Length: 169
Ligand SMILES: [Zn+2]
Image 1 (cartoon, rainbow, N blue to C red):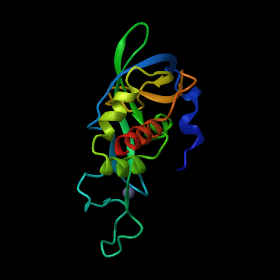
Image 2 (image 1 turned 90 degrees about the vertical axis):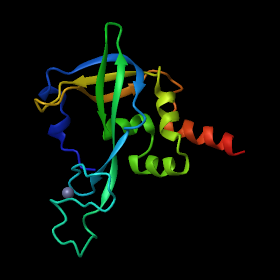
Image 3 (image 1 turned 180 degrees about the horizontal axis):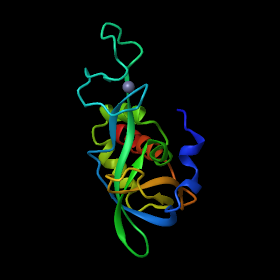
Image 4 (image 1 turned 180 degrees about the vertical axis):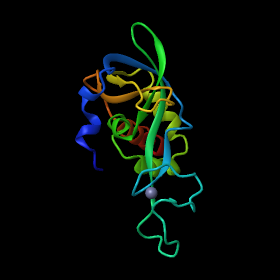
């Protein structure tokens, strides 16, 4: 995935703060979304819907497909307050240790994986960099980077694999 260097330079967002935050809750029903594999605009959940911007030729579905990207709404707490933040794909991958597509496939085999994942993350401490949203109508602070505080932190997918291996045995 191409990330423009200018898009994540901290100097362009003077309102960014870095704090140690505890995750209080994550909505397991809304961890990821369908997006166009070319332009990454969000798409409806209906698997037959294609990107209007990239799919000019409906007889040739090859170039414009869809993929899934993480987008988490999390309730977090610092030592001073409790609030809701939004966490997009690049940062969520650090927590999950996998791509949203792989997590989606895993969830098809294990329908409760999303609930289990949310439960695993609850109470976990991260050092998070939080930025004001760039667009004026976005209401939540964005997590632009995070580092687990616990030295033995295991990405979610590792914990899930262990959990379901145990269950399957
Ligand atoms: Zn597109």
